[in-house]
Length: 484
Image (cartoon, rainbow, N blue to C red; front, side, top):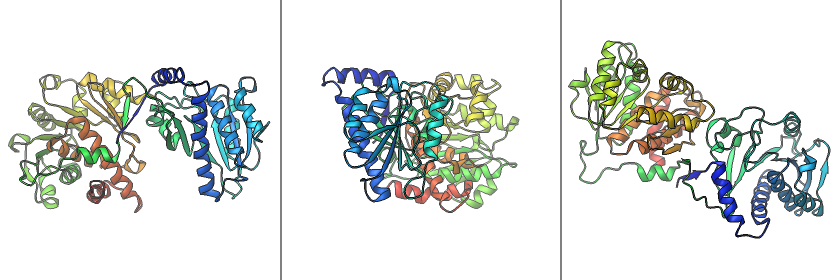
């Protein structure tokens, strides 16, 4: 099920509460034990054994370096050749350093030529800004070392890759790019969103007994969430009971957007798709089960509308968007519909809406709506736009963020660069509309659609370069596996 992530202030508060109940050093020992265990697993998986492997600790001052030193001591006790490069010797954790030396480890003045695993213990979750030049040089040299099998060393970050902002995922300068991040107690936002998610690699959470009192600032969706939420037809259901989704998408200029959005909607849980637009002949040819009309006003009753993909920005498009906004049902606004909102001429239509609205901007569309790009804190950016528009915001990206006006935030882990191609957003908006028509609340519909869409993008990428049609085709088998 979903897991939460907490900002640094909440993590520190939880640590203070726990440390007050435990003997001194207990938390660090728990963290070090989990870290050493994960490193040993990596070494055994790659080299067949832990004994005699070569590990380099990059050690900064403070507790993060202490975690690395104690973990290094545990590995040295298993016969690993552990060397520590102290980047700030005067501030090195003395207890951890003594433990390392007692276990047979040692310190070095430079990076050895042969390294099987690099442990990044330079900066902890309190670090701000990028790596300092000396640390950046050490990281570069360590990553350029050669492992005993001739490959590059594995890189394991302690709690958070150094140089990544724990609260936002911003990477303002040089930073460690880890293969695995072993984080302690709870997830941190910087491991899940922004550039930091890419630096974190595989995230492994070690339980050290931490229980933050605050609510998480964001949640990470997983397949169990989506399976639980996804609407399923009852035995007595008919096509109308399952929900009807309407799509005001595409145009004579962009008929493909209509076809792709209908493809996404047809894969979702809605029992019927109504298409309203000037690309009806293309939709009829590809999806004969769709009910096609020329305009929104002629489409008939629906439980949700999707509007914008390939719609255009002329007077006809503006009229269709106005009709969609007047409908007392949830709506998804994408692409051209977002552009039509920018000049303010539809402000009255927006103010009059009582039904939910979901907007699905990428970064450039976000900038047009908000007046500036999302910036390094994508969670706060999405929350701000959600509050201003009184809408659920699905901020697209490698790690798509979904934020509600009430302050609920989710992040989707299934994104892939394969989806950065024209038309994939049309498929997503159609699927999202189908989930809304099927009865899901806006946030869950947006999160579930992003999750399934990301999986389909990954599946499509297995066959080579991806087009939006490939993603649409991959949705059905992807959902069959996901919902089984």
